[in-house]
Structures are given as structure tokens and as C-alpha cells.
Amino acid sequence: MHKLRSSNLIIEGRAYYGWTMAHHLEMQIFQKHYPAFEISLMKATYGKTRWEYMWGYPLIGISYWYSTLGNTPWLGHAHAIFPFINFRLYHKNACTFSFRLGVGLGYLTKRYDPIENYKNLAIGSHLNGAVNLMFEWRWRIGPRLMASIGAGLMHFSNGTIKTPNFGLNMPAVNVAFAYRLSKENPYQRNKLMPTLESFEFDGKKTVRLDISAAIAIKDMSAQLGVGNRYMVYTIFGNIMKPVSYKTRFGLGFDISYDASDVMVLELQGKPPDKMIKVVKTGFTAAFELSFARTAMVFNAGFYLSGLDQSDGRFYEKLALRFDITDKLFANFTLKAHYARADYVAIGIGYKFNLKYY
Image (cartoon, rainbow, N blue to C red; front, top):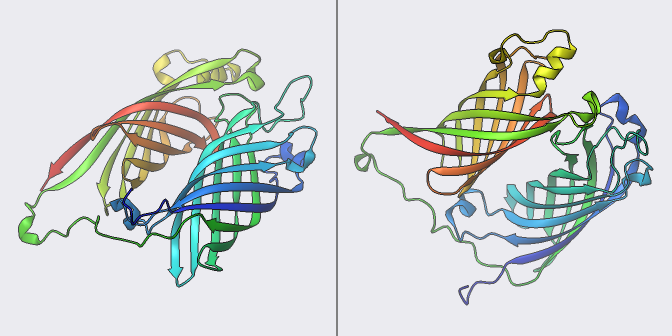
């Protein structure tokens, strides 16, 4: 590290007051108000890389979150550890309004058990994915001390790796105090891409085609009995056009085979005579946010084919993509129907740059 640069680390404590949403009838027994607590270690970006300046010098860090969940006898206590990024939406003088997104792992001390904990229809596993969304207003109290108030949502779900999986949605308000462990670095913007004049550009335009293959495991034990776990195979792609250095818009497609659909159709009295009829194809709109070698891709679309439509014709996907090389990438994809998780897939893909005039 340069001798004029510090670590820019910040430690923060946060207290929540929230409740559990009854987004399904079965969730009403969990409706309670309760506190939660969080401690975070953050780093204030200052323009060391180009994406930090382009996104307005966000805060990045990692948090540990804990709650008793109202001490219900069915849910137990909740723990979560998640990295996050805090985007500045508005900044003036000592005040900042921002949006925080955190994605990590959660642990619930109690889960569904058909004999010992049959009322817990929310979560079928101890280990879950944890997602934290929050809007906050932050202001400086002194050179190193900051305070903030916020409102947001904590979500636990296992992506149907183990059922039942209604998930837990917990809105909350919060207050926090933070302290800088070192002096603040001066902000810089010299990593910004240079502007090209018209005579420097060869007139070519580019769209990017991303193709990926992925697999997932779905557990249907709660619906179909113990041991009913099925594989999901999917191929999907997006044709993306850059709008800026950090965003892309485009269209996407999906081709997937979900082995559990065969069982669902048989239970409905409509067994497929050909496996090709079980294959689902879909068409989506796509949006991408880029952070150096990491990106988030959002898709929303509808099915064009597939016999099993018990989850509805519309679906959503959220993917985290990590570039291994300039062309090769890995991704983690959550697919959902009307915000209810269907499965989490892991895959690998390749980028094709397509030039046109």
C-alpha cells in the first residue's frame, strides 16, 4: 500500500427492530416482532479502480447478523454472514442516502421435521442463503464517527435444495453507529476510461452473447415423500447491448429439463408420452450491472413450452457472474416463480463479442 493511503476500514454496530411477514397462510404462526443485531467491517472505496469511481465510491464489507426470531419454538435463532456493497444514491456535504445489497449464508437453529418440528413449514434446512436489502440515511457526526438510520428486508431461503421452502421474509427498521479505524483517503478519479473522439472510433458496434450451462438439485421430500430429489439441467443465454460502462440491457432464452416435472405430471394424471414435452423453453428480458470482474444479471420472462405449468407461465432469475478469464465465467443462478424460489444452479459459460456496423 502506498504510504499516503490508509486501509480505509470502518467498524459498525447496528440494531434492528423487525417482524416476520406472513406471505403464506402457513406462515401466520411465525408473526412476531423482535430485535436483531449486526456487526460489520467495511472498507470505504476511494477510486483505486475504475469501477469504484463509476459507482460513486460505494462501501464494501462483510456483516454478521443475529436474531432470536421472537423465541418461537419452531424457528429457533438465526445467524447470517454476508458480504455486501452499499451504493450511494445521493450525497451532499456530510449526508449520504444509499442502498445496500448483501448476499451470503444463513443458519437457522431449527428446521422442519415431520415428527419433532412439523409446524415449521418455512424452512427445511439449517443452512440457507441469506439476502439483505436496505435503504439507509448516513451522516457524519465527527471526523471518524458516523450514524445512520435505515429500513430494509432480511430473507432466508435454501432455493428448494431441501423442502419445505416458503422462506423467511423479515422487514425491519434499524439504527447504527460506525467508527473509522484510520484517516479517510482522498478520493480520486484517474482510473476513468478516456473519452474517444469521433475520428478515433472505427464505426463498429458490439453486442455480447453469453451462453451458459448449469445444473441444480431439487428436493421434493415435503411434497412427494422422503428421498425424492431430482436433477435440473439448463442451458441459457443473453444477448446484451452496453448502455454504459456499468450497465447492459438485452434479451435472453432458457432451455431446461427438470426431472421433478415428470413426477408432478404423473400425480396430475397427465404422464408425458415423450420426454421432449417436459423440456421448458423460455424467453426473457435481461439487465446487467457490472463491477469489474463480477456482475449481477436480472431476467424476467415467460415459458414458451413445457407441459408442467403448475408454477405459472412467468418466472424470474437472479445470477451472480464471476469472470475467470476475459471470455470464460462461472455463475450462480436463482430461479423463482412469483418470488418463490424454484432452484439454485451452478454453471459455467462463455462470452462471444458480436460486431456489427
